[in-house]
Image (cartoon, rainbow over all chains, first blue to last red; front, top):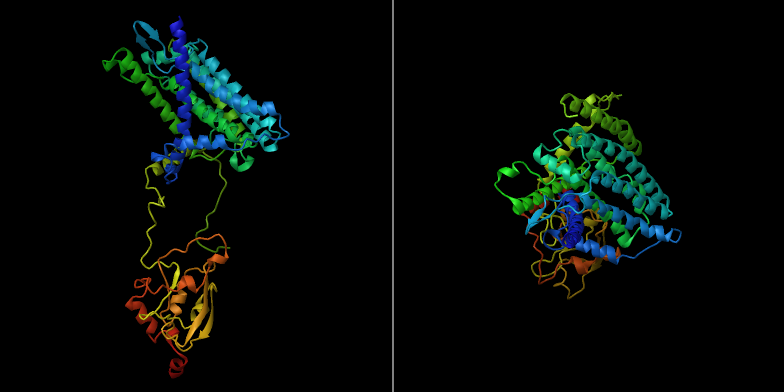
Length: 342
Length: 196
């Protein structure tokens, strides 16, 4: 029992470090990709291929002057980014990063918390995430920050509805809320994208909106709101807000990969003749590869599409995605009824 | 009223179903950005690479000396007249006895200034010069912190006796013959015109 607790702590640390490291290098990747898509070269001065750029950026952030506005609520002002960072890191706990491995007859799962309401936990944490932005923007005592925070909270709440409904159709198929089990089911069957293409599309769009990424980056809107909810932030507190966005992106890529694209499973994995720990290691690598592809899509979309107008955003959320999600549930139910799965 | 034949009638029409889904247009846009991922980068990594410039690039000016090392400029002012940006000013002075090795003609420019902030590097001064004294070179005008530093005087413009600036690229035989050809109005003197 002690052994498994120590293992879980180690796994926590690994997932934490990997998430942070991935997020740091996503900032580099984003800048590289953005410049490539615009026929530029991108950061290439700090180290080979600019690989030390995230470290330089982080150090720069740390050494910047720390400003707390006089008329802000100091405690809430500090709480905002901390909370946003905390919730961003929390979702990683339920994601199955691999099938797990066996050493001396003891099985070590590659999932920090194999809870049977994994999906609910994920949705819950995502909805608390809005508080970080809300508290941060409100406590700044600044019009632009408040507007950004309002936009962020209304956007995230609106798109959570469609996201949840898209997931309900998936849950109808899986019959479980356990993320580990959902991924395991996709080993025996096809990946759920085959059964839920519409659901995936809705989930993808909502994921863009939830992570405040372009084309849904209205809360930030550099060009209209001077940075939105983080207008008044400086130094590492601003760094936390920016960094948490990348962590969110990483985590939502992982969630999409595990819910709709088979997680760590890959086609013909049992025909390779590999067994046990080696196969498990390959599976984890494949899972990280899938996450990378999703991250690429996130960035690719950001550097292609322009930002929505606020009314367009609300129209899309409430008048298009919500009915579509309900329609998807209806269709899924009908198909399940007639194929006798119900 | 139709000014050109290129005008189009714009009608605000309803979007078709496919168009109102936006997804095809989004994928089209994403295909365009993806294609740019593999295109040649436009960046020139400056300190390591420099932009290739034409052999007849029109950069910072030089005031030439003749073979003996005397300044060719005679302060006739034709360059200043030709200059469309009015960047050139000069003050003439008479050559004294004993200065023959310094100045080629009996009159010379005591002050010769080009305001590099006004100059448009068109090369008309070079074209106007009857003494082959001013040329544009492939050197790039350095930046400076004040506007005053950008007004280049003779100390910068006149070439060093020991470090001649090569202007053969811009001083080809074709250019020389063009400058001396009396068919062109700019080479005609008042007497030439009277003769015609």
